[in-house]
Image 1 (cartoon, rainbow, N blue to C red):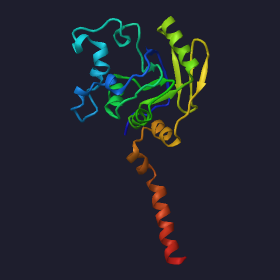
Image 2: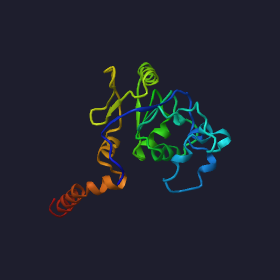
Image 3: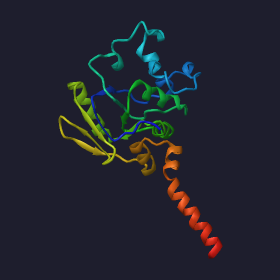
Length: 204
């Protein structure tokens, strides 16, 4: 069972770059492992370090800037495009993010994120810009993401936007269920249905 998600109140890390593809999120040379753990250290590896050398962090990259922290990654539009590697979601989650906010997600990345207890929050472009403006102005800005009520709010301004999510995936995230957990949770109802079905065959 994964980590459940409901209300997340956190600072945010701004990554105002468009068209971030999965090879930039987690370079292909780090895809050999099959376990989900350990990918976080290589998140945005080639952007974080000079020549990929972790002894040479690039000071201008937001993940290397100590003023930015939190469980929410805020990215520009078309996040997660490119190849379908699930490792991209693994790396973001393993790094410590629970939410990614953008004005557009690649469909495959969005599905991979939801399957790995990483919540993709889709917002209009103008609201995304408001988030960037507030976080750049004050890195301690808090965002509230409420999955139950499906909204994201900038605490300092009160600006709020709703977001959509598949109802099944919402249930899974709220309860920390993967697909197997969900089916096991439904077992009493499945057993009841099967019993009624068998009785109907016998007596119907």
